[in-house]
Image 1 (cartoon, chains in turn red, purple):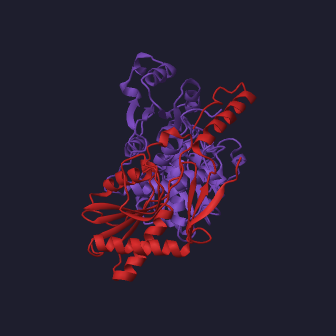
Image 2: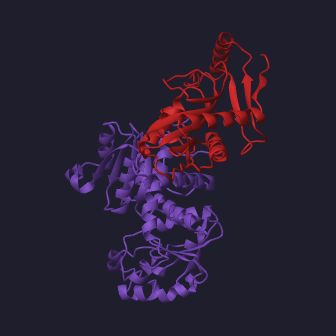
Image 3: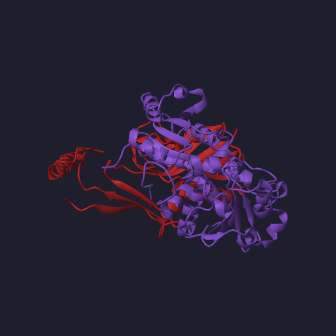
Length: 212
Length: 310
């Protein structure tokens, strides 16, 4: 099997430039910061939300309210998994009604997380608008959702892994992509072969052939 | 981290990590109760049966609200309004209800072991809401949640449980849970209401209230079941009040920043004076609010385990 390759997509300066540009775009589109509130999706979306808020404070001198959100309770696959995801705390200590709400996440992929976040926001009130800001858009959407502000678009295959590292909880700032090194067509049969072997090894197991 | 069992029958044998997971999850759910819309869609499509063979105010309403706040469908069964009066057995009753496609059962019953019995004859997840004099795990969890909320920890605290140690399922669940979490636990009550070999729980045993209160942080006062008086466990109610009633005067023996708890329903003037029950160190109503969050956490964590692994 070919080795996985790790590439750097954005370094520390790159992330910082992206956040600066997104902050300017947000201010331009909303005519300043007065109507804004920011909500970050835990965990790294929340870190980025805080950075955008402090960048906007730098630019406009306005403090905008920042909230954190755990979306696991609104997931559409809660009962398909055997173990429940750990629930972290949602902290929205301000009114979202009639505000322009900037929703922040690190990576936009299938769009399912954002769908859950939108449902949750509506339970807190009716914002004037909800705009989506992400550091990385890697494509492969499964729902009709698009970002309003993007740090960087990167083409990926579904088997690649995109990792956003932030100094708040990782060693340093960077965005990495781990290429699977396999074309989608190569991987599928190999995986099936593995499964077949496993089922043969333990013939008693009835559920051995379960696929994800 | 995950729960080992797909049922919650008691706290005996539940590890410190599992208890911490439930309490941490409950912290997140506590926030939902404060929202303008107190509801999340997590348990949509799950049907919960509340099976109450014994009267209950707090536990029943608390579970029902917890289920509704998680968007589960709920049905509540009370013995008085059912075919139990026509002689239908427990097993037939639950199997018939399960045939209507339910997923989880919250059960309260006067006989110890009923929740375990249900695990043997049903496929649903079973949550014990109090069985006989065995256990009442969600009550002990909410007691621990409330203690942790105030002190920021459980380890090292001195907790005294006062009252009918022999018959109280709340005491038993509290002992298992608090010991697991590293608390120092004492029980206190008349010797007729202490079970045989109670010290084997690893608790300090007192029959003198003043000695028990000395140096304690948390006092959890159990309801003295007045019906027990007829069965000869207590000489008179007044004697119990004199010897074991918690009065403002007695609170001076406690550590600074002490806490008064009571699982309810209270017999004011019997095991607790109104002055203590409504005092600023009493967290009785906070316990009730927290109960909802803890029960939401338990329902949520168990609902993921739809089928037995391997």
